[in-house]
Amino acid sequence: MALYFLLLAIIAEVIATSTLKLTKGFTLFWPSILCSCVYMICHYFFAKAIQELNLGVAYALWCGLGILVTVLVSLIFYKESLSLTGVLGIILILAGCLLVNLGGN
Figure 1 (cartoon, helix red, strand yellow):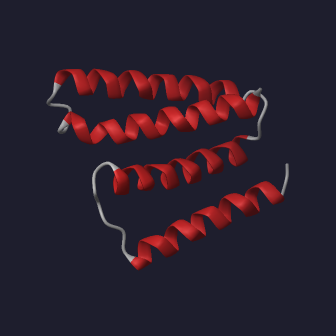
Figure 2: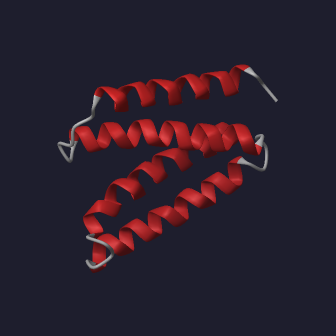
């Protein structure tokens, strides 16, 4: 169940971070409300996940996978570009997530 909560936290974090751009620096009311509410949902699920998971591993996965999916969202929906250095950085993040999980508790 903890991994399910972590997955929900990651999905919510990606949604919140992706909608953050739509708030225009929190100057637009409804996008700001949406973003804030989804961040609260994200932290709720993360708090539930770390009741059973190792905090360091859960946080590494949350950040790493959140970054990866957020980059994909920015490429697809916001038509942003990614340099070769950026691609290398994402590969290193994924490698780090893999190593953290292979290391176990």
